[in-house]
Length: 121
Image 1 (cartoon, one colour):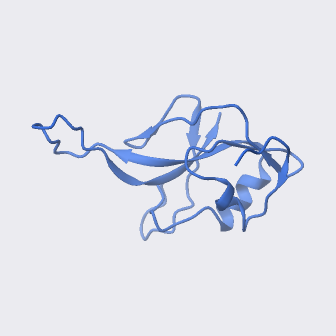
Image 2 (tube, rainbow, N blue to C red):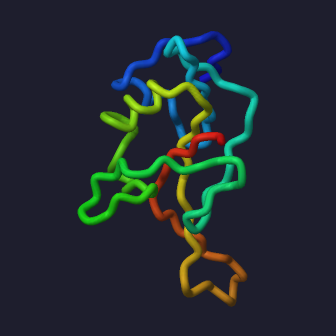
């Protein structure tokens, strides 16, 4: 979805706009556009330089870090806070390197660990 003109987004519709690797910019008037910026990478809990992960929104028992469970979505307090703070955001798949790799195939065997939202610094 190309958002060249500002689109009004609500906390209920933000999850639909923020597809994985789809960078959005939230403007002071609350509208959202799509800037010409590539999504960073998120691997082993580390995001590309120049980006920070939003933290403290996961509802997982005993965990409050930035990696969200696959069953969670962008809504509630996270959506409210994103729309309240102008900036550039992106939802990312969180990959992790497993301890055991498949040496025969040479495949790194990266696994999906969940997802996270990054904000451009």
